[in-house]
Image 1 (cartoon, helix red, strand yellow):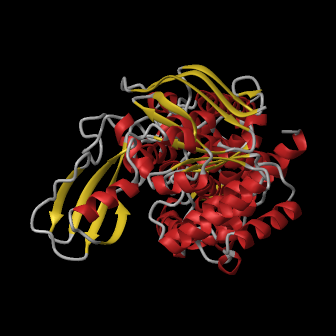
Image 2 (image 1 turned 180 degrees about the vertical axis):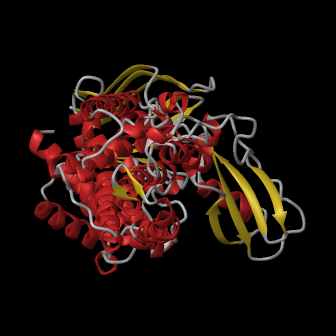
Length: 320
Length: 257
């Protein structure tokens, strides 16, 4: 059974912005799925519709076989959502926020308290349970939102940029937590700007642009569409001019850094052989950017652009 | 979601709203108590002494039911409009919208929140009133029922305001420019029998006149309007406002895009 199935989903906002333009998407039960796309691509609108914070213009959404239009409560029960923007009552205590959310899902008070304790402990927030949300750090607020989303034991967890603004240590501990959650059977859909995050965590990916799915499939297969990888090399000795290496495009970023585009048809061994032949010894090598990021920019034909200026921003999902 | 689960969700929302009212008691309970004491000192003691009796009652006694109603109306309304609007603007309203609780439950929960504050404030200001003047509570059931219906009506009014509001100005416009004038012109401080005929007829178009007088009838046994019409009007208002709130949530008006 599909955890999520979206068919010909369209969303046109009142201001005329066509955020989703007939999207088809399926996420298998148990999957760890990445939803990627530039700002304004339609990701948040899609999540908004699935979580019923945004009304769709047309199309069909089912969650674990339950239709969003016909069986809304079953769909809501199956989903836990961590939105992109902070939506906590900052004056409420952490524990109250989670316990109350369980109550809104119909969990009796005792059970709600048990579940809240479990979730807060899992996310290392138990010792902060009596603190108001406003007094928590950014990372703790994010974790509190995850605890709140998990308190009713959803089968599908949707995370919209969950690690934005979170330091690397907490990000990695959150990755570990999400991996364990997924291994325990929860289907996870993740949108992120940290493409490394998607590559590390997710098995399948869909790339959205201009409200359409432009690529979808297993992460490994999607990555094979990468035409080239760009490496940054640090030479042992300063290099005054970019060396000519047959079959490779080489740029000099500075006397201590070479940038080499490696086509898929060539190997790293061949590159090093060419460098050795040119008398250049290399101290270190790293990707210029994440491989998925390269692919992402290639697919969205946005290479060289940091963002998408001129694009009308997608209205935020939820209350306005 | 079963009826029992809806009841749990409703109880959770009521509890949340109750704790909000109690947590910020310095903003929610204390100011109306101080206002009430000032009204009694200035209008009741200083000015009221010169006015003498109204409808056979000492002026302090006469204005007490209207002042209590005024506190209930403004606090029930203010509680829901600020609670709902702040939840909307700070986006934690989404906690309710993503959960499988029905829109009827959401409306009932917010209405109950407003009623809780209205009742707490109403009880507190009644205690202050009793410090200044005796109140006979002639018809206790009418007193209690009007008290609760009034709190419910204005909680729902506040919720509609909260749903429609786009900014903080929208939250304050109705209480300042509509509610307050209607309250002051709704027979809180005088009997409309004192007004010229035309002004009396215009006053009868003011719904708050019926609430104030129904409550005064419960407390003192006198009213400017027939009590049956007051109940009919309150019942119709409750039904209309409740339906409007549910309809607005069903349509996602200014809540879901």
